[in-house]
Image 1 (spheres, rainbow, N blue to C red):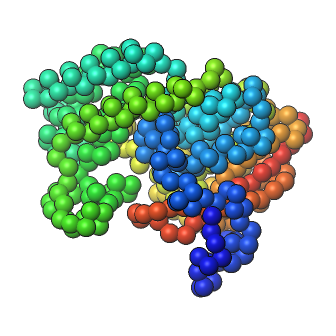
Image 2: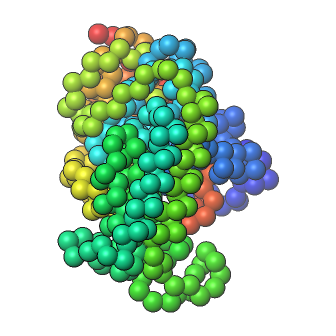
Image 3: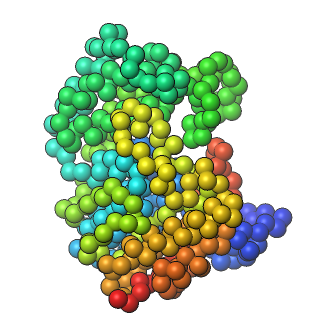
Length: 391
């Protein structure tokens, strides 16, 4: 939590509110420091299967599941992202339905929440890794495509292509787990600086001063070490979640929340929708789309960074979010809880909630701990606790 002595003296305005006012409004029970909530807890078990920008922490979901849902009920997340709500709901015996426009997000959420025969899964993953190692010196990368050839050293690309061929021999659900291992390894093996894995703009092909390691570094030239490391880490994380996993159902729908016909009998919503002009969700996983041949729907993203935050882009965001939330709450009973975690720095959500006919019951401000990297620094977000409209 944030002590008064930690507050900066300069005045900063966020969405019409000074930072001092934000500190006064903070819910300190939802604002954890690094010491109170270290990264190892924020990425516990399957939450750390693959890096994902813009996800909310599982501890925040736990709080609102406990406040608004009971064992045996169902929660809907219309912007499921990496599946945080779905995982935590299942661990607490609560059914979950998640929707997302991104094929990679749906794949990742499915892998996190699937029930596995762990001995069979481990055997399959180790077998795929061994086959890839055996084939890497003879595999052809000629059909990999220009993007992959640009962003990976020749040996790294061969490692990844060999593993992709090996996982094609696996059956579901082991094949999907292997796809996440492949994607995670590709993310780490790109020709980029170690300190800029989140937003690399151009490939790094030579030595550079590394701000992360405080020394001269070179880009990664092979991916095999990541495939080995993440195979072990994935098996370990799935084992840990298997100890917590309940029989509560999880359903994941790949589609646009604005137009999906949602028929689930959910008792409420917990979600963190995309923020306007902040992240290109398809682009952050470009390597996965290229390697796995996933269907891309980047043009349908709401609030994509590529659209910016101009007046027109913000108006487009308001219209899209109003439609999405209005559609998502349609199956809910009157008064059902709708918990929305947002950074409303542009002050858009008053109009969005009104347009979706949601009644704001409580607005909670929390401090978000961001430790390092280009996205570090002071950051606040709101938790909008609403009630669904009458039918």
